[in-house]
Image (cartoon, rainbow, N blue to C red; front, side):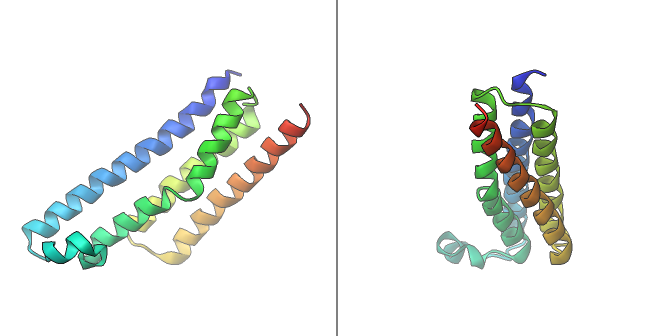
Length: 139
């Protein structure tokens, strides 16, 4: 198995972040056009934006929490040439769960559903962390 395959889920997650920034820009533009935001307040307080903008902003913030651990693990897998079908599979489970979590977050924002996908992503990340630790110890 090619070791570089681990970069595909990393890039897929990066595209999620870029897509969320685009969505944030669209929602902010719509809020400005409809005059539902006080721009002077919003310049200093992100809570001055309408709820749909805050949803996307919060979702973007989430992309710089547990995914940072994912990026570190991916770099360890890449540099140590540990990529295998299991580590790659867990990486894809993590990214797909993050996409689904983001979809729910910026859409219905139904917290019990969001929580399910958060738990799937976090559990896959935890298992991946354990696998990387074992692979490092076996070296």
